[in-house]
Image (cartoon, rainbow, N blue to C red; front, side):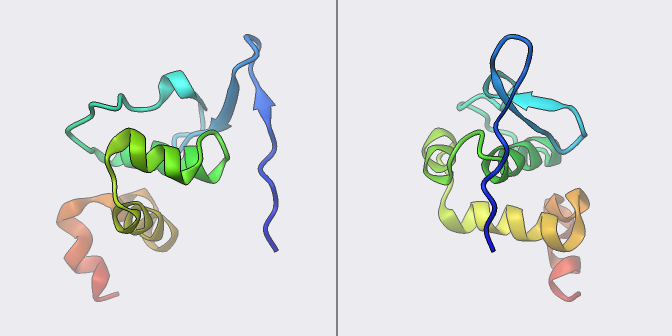
Length: 97
């Protein structure tokens, strides 16, 4: 059963979700739309923002120029292996798991 994410706001009234490092993540904290280097934390922040309802999947894909397949791969890697699953050098290792 799908549950709607809780809408949380900080003291400035900005919506936020808890990011991958355990700290609140607002729209202003998300990676810039021009991000060219996708490190583990940035990928995980985008996934957390979508999962938590901060932005919807279509907004994330458009904002970052991602394909559905790329986003789903990030999400699947986190679900299966945690943030370490997002390491591009580890993908082949995890695929066999």
